[in-house]
Image (cartoon, rainbow, N blue to C red):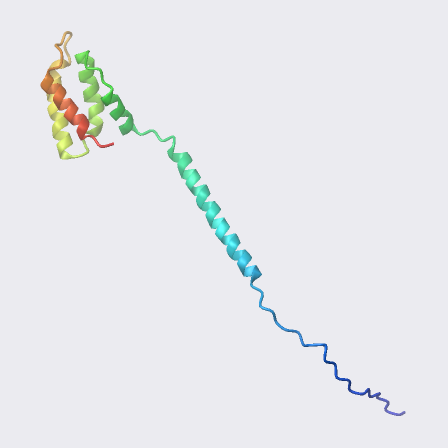
Amino acid sequence: MQDSKIQYPAIELNDIKPLLEIDDYSLYYFLGLLGLCIILISGILFLLYKWYINRNIFNIRVEHYKCLKEIDFSNSKDSAYAVTFYGATFKDDSQRHKEMFDNISHRLESYKYKKNVPELDKETLSYIELYKEMIDV
C-alpha cells in the first residue's frame, strides 16, 4: 500500500481573521447600577420605617408642657395641683429647674389641702410663668 496523503496547494486566505478578545464591561455596569439601586431603595425604606415608628411616639414631656401652658388659673386650688403635677416632669432637667420647682411648690402649698382658698397672688403667678419659660421641650 502506498502512503497516500493528498497534498493540497496552499491557498492564502485574506478575508478570515483570528478571533479578537473584546472587552465588555456591561455586566459590571449592570451589577454596579443594581447595587446602587438596592442601596438607594433600602435607604428609602429605612427612612420610611423610622418615620412610621417615630410618628406615633407618645412624649410625656411634650404633653405635660402643653397641659402646663393651658392651665386655667381661675380655680386656684385645681391650678395649684396641676402646676405641681405637670411641673414635676421638668424639675430634674437642671439644678436651676429643681430650685425653681421647689420654690413654686412651697408657694403653692398654701393653696392645697384646704376647702376654701384665695386667688393665686401675682408673685406666684409670675414664678409659674418664669418656670414655663425655662422649660425646654
